[in-house]
Image (cartoon, rainbow, N blue to C red; front, side):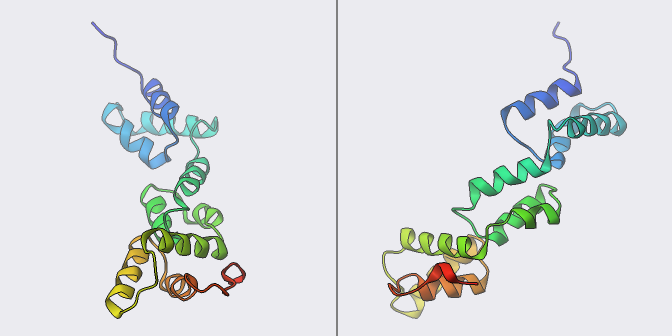
Length: 155
């Protein structure tokens, strides 16, 4: 007969594969916990020992997504994972970096600027779905195919 894994070893198994937020770890361990107190004790121990860190998780998440998504989408995803807003704000790419990402995505998806309203709307929807704000989308659309544009000096 196989012995039952402890909550600590289950948590260690989860964290050995990849970084997860505290909320995500709690959700994964909940079915195996005897009580809420036992679960909180394990979560607190892992956080104190820095085996689990929301900051580290958020940093890895932002790093992996910043070249494909805008700040709005990244913030929403991290918020859903239980990462506090102050941590998220600290890790967001700057405006120039986000604009460069938006322009790069436009160039990869569309080979030329929208010639009519329908094409322009399609490009706007694409960037909006990727989590860019309307200000960022408008600036990216304006500068994406302009050779003389200084997009990296944008404030």
